[in-house]
Image 1 (cartoon, rainbow, N blue to C red):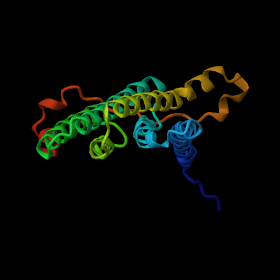
Image 2: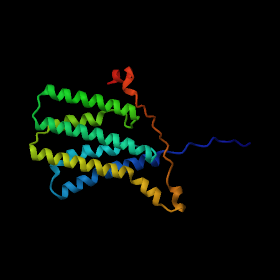
Image 3: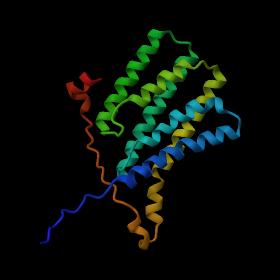
Image 4: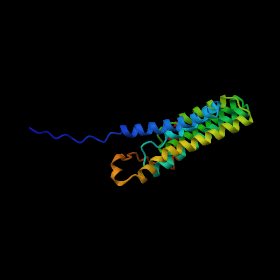
Amino acid sequence: MTSSLAPRPPSTRTLDLEAAMRASVGLLVPLVVLLAIDRLDLALYASFGAFTGLYGRNERYRLRRASVGAGAAMMLVAITTGVLLSLADAPLALEAVGLAIVLGGASLVSTAMSLVPPHPLFPVFGLVVCAAVPVDGAQARDALVTAVAAILFSAGVCMSGWLLRRWAPDAQAHRFRALPRIPVRDAAVHRDPAAWTAV
């Protein structure tokens, strides 16, 4: 008696490991650089900038570029807002206003772009922590330069697989798994009352 088994869907474990490796490299390299130049006081900003590497997971590169760009923009706005609030020694009420703006904006962007991770936790966390760390003018400048560098590096790591796939010999093409996730974009999400309720 023979039985036919339904084919198993392709495992995403390898893709998950690749995403974890990209995020790890995006964080580790900036921290090693800061350690080498004896500026670990900036590690906080490099770490938040490296959160960019968590976006665009398992997406085709044309789509991933938009997702990573959106994630990078959210993190840059959040970190910059937090640093400026700290530099200005802003009162709690002003910090709350900044937090509400970043929370609302990040929520709408995440929903409109169908981002993964799907929530505004990372931008909100970045703003709150950066706003809580006292800085002077020079420290604020260094913090923002560090954050931008980490964001750009992390985004580059996220897109590096495109070069590997493009340059790999045809005989090695089978080693690259298909990228299954196709996010559904919704540019009109701001018109949906449910989206504002979620915010």
